Length: 108
Length: 118
Image (cartoon, rainbow over all chains, first blue to last red; front, top):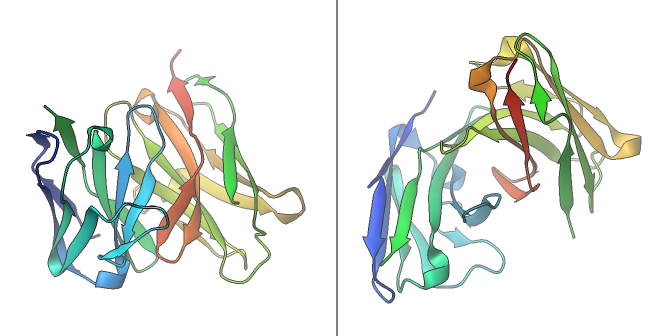
C-alpha cells in the first residue's frame, strides 16, 4: 500500500501570500493517479486537482498542481480568506485509493 | 447534475452491524465505467477510503477492513449499500459516498456521522 505524507501539517499565511503544500509518496505514483481535495470546515471534500496538474471544473486558476514520481505539490498563488481549509492528496494504485493526512491552511 | 446522499443510523452499539445507504441521481450505475465508493473520516482526522462498486458489479475493498465490509448496488433504485460488521468505537466517523470519476472522487455526498457507543 502506498503511503502519502503531507507537509507541513499546518500553514498559516496572510491573504495574498503564496501557499505551497507538499505530498510525498512512499513509492512512485503515476501522475494520472494523483489528486488534491479541499475540505472547508463542516463540508465534504471537493476535488481540486486531478492528474497531478489539471484543475477540476470551477476551480479558480490560483490553484495549481505539479510534480511527478514521489513528490507532488499543490500551490495556491494568492491566498484568499475563503481558502481556509484542509487539503488532502490522494493516489490510486492497483484498484485501491489512499489519502494523505492533510495540510491545514490557516489565514492570518 | 450529479448528487449523492448518505442515510443510515446515527448511533450504533459496539459489535452491531452498520448499514448505510447512498442514494444518487444524475447518473446510472448500469453505465459502463461508472463507480460509487465510500470514504470515512473520524472526527478531526484524515480521510480513509473503504470500498467501491462498479457498473459491472466488480467490488474492491480496503485491505485493512475487507473482512468487515460488504458493498452492494440496486441499480433500479439508484442506491449503493455499505455494511460494516462488528462496529467498534474507533469506527466513529463521518461516512461519505462519492461518484468515481476517472481515478478520483467527484462529487461527494454531504456525509453522515455515525457514532459507536453503548
